[in-house]
Length: 297
Image (cartoon, rainbow, N blue to C red; front, side, top):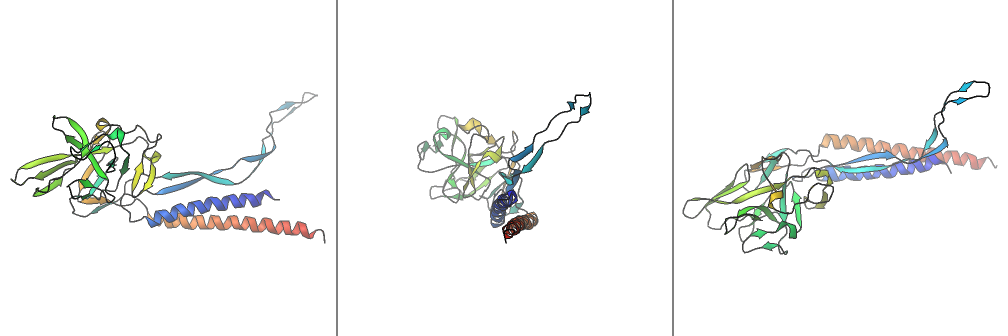
């Protein structure tokens, strides 16, 4: 059988994967905080027909020049499927619990009902809970005044406990609060029933040396992997917005998807043509095999 036929099959599989990724990007073009995917290819192992060799001295003192290797490629394969963490456009909503990050960093979420979360004192032991991370800043208040995302996961921040210590915990706004606001550094302020300003806590962010190493969980969230950087084990691992390389926090706005439709449609067209070209290779190889079969007649 011809090697070109199997090379064409490998190319078709690769472009199928790329089209799947492009389709997912386009489907999430209006998803808050979505980070687009990108597929890269690499060639497969080559079959060596003849090896390289250096210059050779002949019997009569003549020197024969060196030869380059002769190799036939065996197709292509998917090299990587990357997550591109570039900044998305900002959409103004004027809703106080909509938060957008202008720069690096991610919101930290903790699931309710797990060991390590004290729902009475609102403290969270980050090393004992499953945390997830997101760039989607559309948050809400639950029945107890805690700030949660659309799946009920708590937004993690910095609190001051009864002993005056700074701890990681659940940010809560009392029901008696007349109004509240979130500052660019993540500080959550509210006005109590007496009209006095109070501080509910401060939203803290996680920043990873390799955010592309995070794994997508769905629901606009990511989970930690060892290739992302240092793990989040406590409050000391969380950063204040606008400091230590993290971006400013903007209330009343949301970060949109970083998918560029023009780029996506262009990549879709080139992927379609690439897939089509590989089918032509299979068709041509089949015609050659047909000619070989017809030699017997």
